[in-house]
Length: 359
Image 1 (tube, helix red, strand yellow):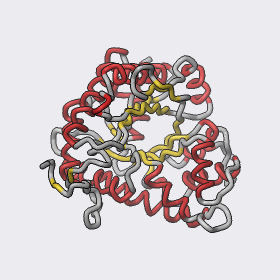
Image 2 (tube, helix red, strand yellow; image 1 turned 90 degrees about the vertical axis):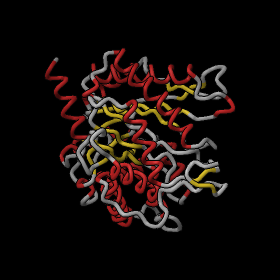
Image 3 (spheres, one colour; image 1 turned 120 degrees about the vertical axis):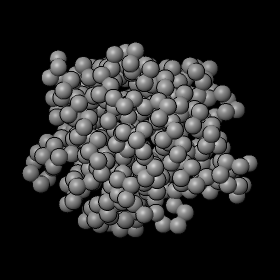
């Protein structure tokens, strides 16, 4: 048992390598298909495989990546370079392979559209299969929204989702996989930064409370959380420094130091804004902040890649690879706090033009 726990710690430490982050490529065939079709690329299994191969094998990408989150389909696909399955290809490059095992989203009755993820019942069996296919971790997302008028996220919504995340984490560890827990509070809304801090503290404190109650081995788990931001339509403006301070406040109040790394999701932020904010957070880190704080980005990195295919014939794999590695270099610098933002990147520009939380 102690060897199993030691292995979880080793994998969590690999994922939390300073200056490296996670490439999130776990969109299901339908989601990636929508992104393909929006730029005129046909959604075939071969196109999905070839595209993911570029994300895994582009020269220099492994200098900036510690891990990759795969859709179950990708686990069983092979590289055309050497005929090996992708998990093996990734591990050989020092990139830890993992999988997204959550299934369908389900609306909680009487909760104004708030949801919970399904898939716990069959999780242990699937985790054993994923481990056999070469995975070392899994990632489970619990999406939440701040909707003050409708009282969301309610105590029930938070408790249901965080208990599920804790149970998922326990099941993963029993099968030898590091659990990445992902409480994902959406960017949409009109709430201010102070409200975002309050809700994020409530969600994260419940998450870590439940993980400890369930007996999750905290040292062998990883956090993937949203950045603490004002709602997208918040009328109040905030500087990137104020946003960075809010993120550190939440972590100082909630995030156990037993855990080594948090890898932020992008959640609809542009690469420029997400990088400026991650960089500002890392620049402000002090003695109270022992964690590695890095990235686990999908849309922020991939959306510009799809644009390269617009009006062209199929996937522009070479151009995609070059831009992808350039983007990862920016993300890596932000994870080290050595990125230089341009202009007002990372600031929240409120509709009301008021600054610094002053209404």
